[in-house]
Length: 333
Image 1 (cartoon, rainbow, N blue to C red):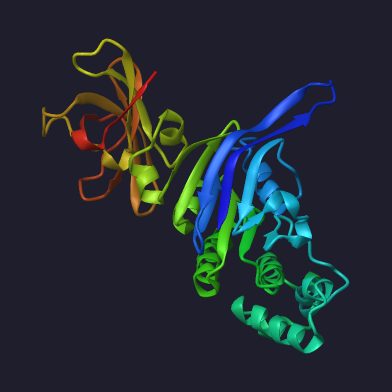
Image 2 (cartoon, helix red, strand yellow; image 1 turned 120 degrees about the horizontal axis):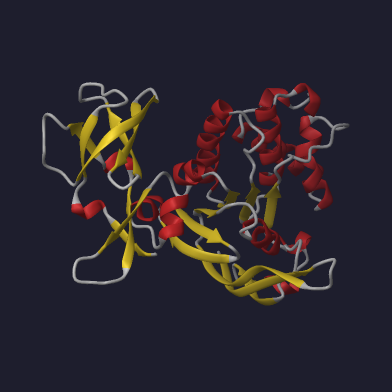
C-alpha cells in the first residue's frame, strides 16, 4: 500500500543550518495491515507520517501510495486521512456535522453523506450521539468522533498521530482494542505513530522501531520483542537487563540483554547452582507479577519479574540468579 524509498527530510534552523529529521528511510507498508512507527520523541516518526499525508515534502527520496506517486498529489488528493492527537473537532458543529464535514468538502451527494455518517458513527458505536456537540462528550467519545470523521470518506490509509496520548490509562487500553477492531472491520491500512511500546505491541501487525531519523528494525511484535536487532531496540521495547559480559573465545566486551521475566531467582540457601548470587535490594508488587531488583557482585543490578509460584522473597535476602542460554541476546558495546 505504501512504498517509502530512501526518504530524507531536513529542516532549516534559525541559525541558518540544517537539521536532519529523516535519513534515507525505506519502508514497505502492506495493504490492510496495522503498521506502527515507534520511537522516542524527536526520532522522526511524526515527520514521516506528515510526509505520507502530504503536509511536508521530502528533501529526497520517493513515496508511493498504491499505484500513485505521492509527489504529484496535494494532501487532499491522496487516498489517506489523518487522526490528530488533539482530535481537531469543530466545537460549533454537532457530532454528525463533524463527521459529514470531509464528505461535504469532497462534494459527495447529500443522501450518500447521511448514509456514510450513520455508517461511520455505527462503526465507533456513537449512533445515539449524532446531535450532541463535542463539548458534551468525554475525551474517549471525542476521539471516536475524530475516527468516524476520518473513516467516513473511506480512505485507503488512515494515519494516526499519537491518537490516544491524551486519554487516561483505562480508556487508552479500551481504545487500543477499539482501534484494532476498526482496522479489522474496515480493512483499511492503519499507520500509527506512538512512543508507547505496550501500545505498539498490543495493536500492531508489524512495527518499525525508529531512532534519530533511522529505522533500526521492522518486524512483528513478538519478533522485535524476542529478537531485538541491537541494544537500542532491546532497551526501548519493554524492559530489559543489559549486563556486561564477553563471548567465550572472543576478546571484545559485549552487552548481554535478558528480559526480566526470563530471569529466575531462588533463595541462596535452597540452590547453589545458577549464574550468579546476589542480594534483593527492592521488591515491588505489581498485581499479577512481582518485580525484584537484585544486586550482583560488582555492583551490577538486574530486575526479575516473577509470577508468585515461589514463596515471596523479601528485600535483603540472598538469592541465586539464572536464565536459559537461548533467551540471551548479545550486542557490541
